[in-house]
Image 1 (spheres, helix red, strand yellow):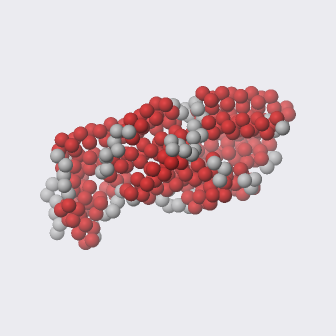
Image 2: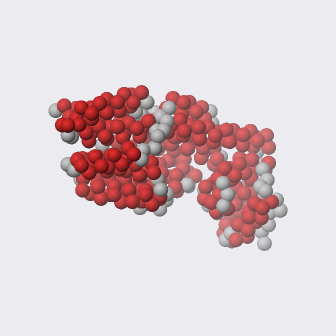
Image 3: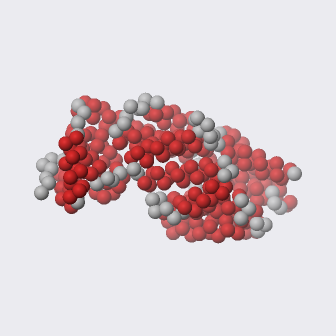
Length: 352
């Protein structure tokens, strides 16, 4: 029987690789936090899991297939452990990097693009030589968040833009073989196609991803909602409403309040485009009543949607224009370029 007398980060990483699991999948398999596995691997031989976790790793190794155990032996033979000082330095760096990613995500949600970009680029510009799995994973997460910032600002193509940044992250996740992260970036790239006006391509992508088991139920529901948005933009409003209603039901089952509110906003616009103004007003009122505060982007979207619907009725047209002005001012303040262009387009259509 294959036995490990004392587990360290080196043996834990070898077991994960032998089982061909991502860090997240291995953590889920063990029933522990992702950060715990990350710290083991960053600490290497200088990190020793707790006794109860050592026993858990023993069990996983004993239950591994003969092929997995053979790979485990081979990986351990090939291990060249860096000096402990390097492991300690990197463990500290990686923990700080992970903390900065959490901070950047909060700033990004608040559309504080400058602070988020400073936090992300600090690591992207200083860690190009970190080629171990954990360094690559954190680099990919940084690129995705930076891509999100570019996307929200409407910077979609070019050397420093959302599309290229997402593709760089996709290359790393493919190298690390993390299916869920690969699918999430593919979803982000599909959104870029929609924003760029490539509606047929975006619709095909959303259709596939809405049934893709690599994604979480929430991301699959979002894919379905965005499929509806794309169909509505293409003038296929009845099909769009059907898909959006499916997404609404899924989001309600998942108790995703913010997504549920966003879905009602998009559903309201689809009904407006179909000429169902009473239904559009009812749905946007639901979206407004259930809006989750904290994201300027969603506030702009809601105000713009409400204003757009009010423009359709002469009695409420002036109020609609006022809401569009407020939304445009907020979009300018938070550098939401794509939203500002959409609002300008609504006003031009109204003036014709």
